[in-house]
Amino acid sequence: MKERVYRIHAGIPHRIALLADLHNADPGNTIEILRHRRPSLIAATGDLFIGYRAQKGENLLDRQDRILPFIRACTALAPTYISLGNHEWAASSSDLKTLETAGAVILDNTWVRDGSTGITVGGLTSALLMDYRRFREKNGEERRYPEEKRHTDAYVLRPDIKWLRSFEQQEGFKVLLCHHPEYWCLQTPMLRDHPIDLVLSGHAHGGQIRLFGRGLFSPGQGLLPSYTGGIYRGPYGKMIVSRGMANTAPPPIPRLFNPREVVIIDLQ
Image (cartoon, rainbow, N blue to C red; front, side):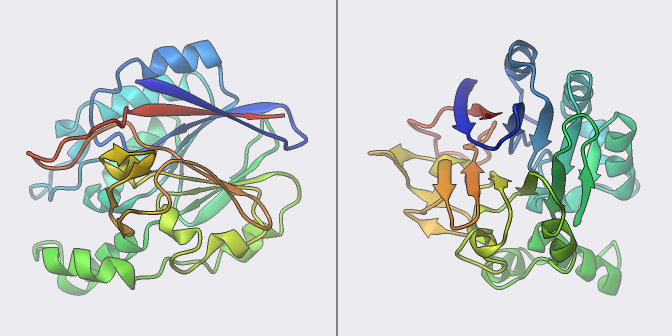
């Protein structure tokens, strides 16, 4: 696991660890890195799970057994906040409650003020997850969400942003956990144009294969995507995108020149 560090002038001296796209993979030496770096706050920006459909009555945490120990280790080190990505569609309310019992705070289209740092932390839930929820409410748990709908509608679905206005009006430094980097300026809500100090994202997996410093493909962005890893600046704030902690592309697609990473953000 590679460690990547960014420094941002923010007027407050705190350290944030950005973790994205675990997908129930081996977290490697992530906890060792976190113990060494001692972050003030840990931000997990979605896709802890692998989103296959659970059997009736099954909790995914029973089978995806790396997630809960990992979150417990994180919460023992620092306040840990989780936003919900597209793969969290498969997690039941019981799964999410178990993560909260382990000490994490799940930000499902809501925000809180972190008591130890004074930072206001929000979590924007994936529009794909919101659509999964509507589908299940309409059709019941037994009917399978269409795979073709999952991919074709990903470009037109919109997240719930009604709560963002309240979040943006808070005083002090504001951090938004948002799984999809395409929400920065490629798809509504165009977060680049919102008064948010720092947006933290993942989802793009670094572009899967990196050539000449660019990713090759990302869901939601297509070929030669613009936002796969690094820091991006807007008129109000910045977005940092993690290349992720796992490889979920099916064989024989490799992950090349694109090491998994933990992102450390020093606010200065």
